[in-house]
Length: 620
Image (cartoon, rainbow, N blue to C red; front, side):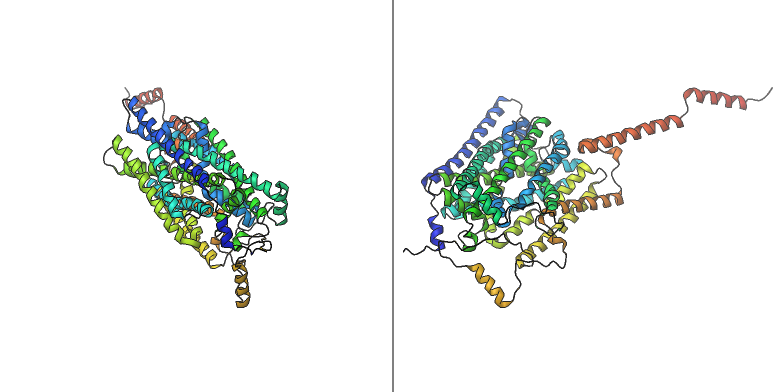
């Protein structure tokens, strides 16, 4: 009888990434670079054919594709920008560990679509902006514009390195190649096509990357489902382990997921990512009219819902495959986000080229998010910083150099920060949370801008700063409790009784140590006292935006709110715009009536003067 392999030998045996897989991966990168070159040449031809090309025309061509993009590529780009590698790898892990409760967040995505469709999108599309934060200057003042831009840049620089790092983990699981060897190469390709091709290159590479992502995920679930014995087996094992869940109706703010956190908090969470995000709004503004933008919203919602369903099912498939040998407890997968890549190498490793397709799909998700982020940061830096502080208008050449220089610099910074993200280890979640600290204040000041006309600039600034500091405190305290074990989330049932390889069971050793020392279990949290920072993380963005709006209203009324009759109603949501316009009309009509009743007619004035003259004449 042959001795069993140990876990390290099994992991190495699964790293069957051959030359066909590398060819598929390189072809994906090459196609992206060629798309960038194509649109760079196209922009040059268009510039030569137009004799009088202004700086504004050049900016429109680079940042919003000349505002004449087609619906299908923009919708695909929106999906690709939203579905990052974190989504592709994180959602299956979430379902594997904690069940399907998270998937009910799809309901809040639909609600967010309606809010974006009717309240936010009409305002931004009518104003024809390039930087979303130009709106803040028009609605409030220049300080608010800079405040919003700084928050956006801060959040992007914290989020994008994680977007790059997560798929690098998948590549490492599949090939064993060091992540710092592959990330600079991949990111250089992304920086190149984003720099030379502008938005059109970003959008069309997103189309290619979306198709690769979806094809790779469908391939995994079809082949994996066949291997475990069919959909019925996947469903039965998930049901038996309690992973198929009905909506949690518990009214407990500290529960990780409830109907209330998923639907109410989830709407705010999605709104920040879609309704006011420079990354997303920039694409809607590249469409020629409002009808096209709204159609793109509908396609985007349907596409994201499909991806979430596919990723959620992948989590159930991972459990069906490893139901009797948990790869996290045995350390076959060293990190949570390596569960899906492990499954891929298990079921597709014997088919040359297919693991390469999956890795290309995961990196496609990362590249789409990175290229979108770099293009958006370039727009914000040019519009909100360089042009705002320039003493004289920038020339076309200066504008072109700045746009591309910003992409290169911030791309290099993001690649460098991957080294920092790797060293963070267990506090990786802290970095993700800190990047969302700005979400609440940003959503609050934009929502106040389009929905609450009384809030003025000083009130919005005080509200935003108050929310920013309060949310930073909340996130730090919450992550400190998670790191110390005061709060932890209990996994769904798992076992290692069916493993066919040897390993060291660190989890069991830890449990024995806890029983010996009498230390409390990390699987429970102290329910005797309530702390605001222990509420579900899905409430964070909503909570931060409410603080911004409430404090902004109080400060505005103390200092003197905006006078509605002086408001530019194009800066308000259509429903609020109609209400303010009717209010203005009623006030104007009332003032006109009062003026007519208080001011006598010309004929009446002459009659009164004649009577006064007769009274003053002496009697004869």
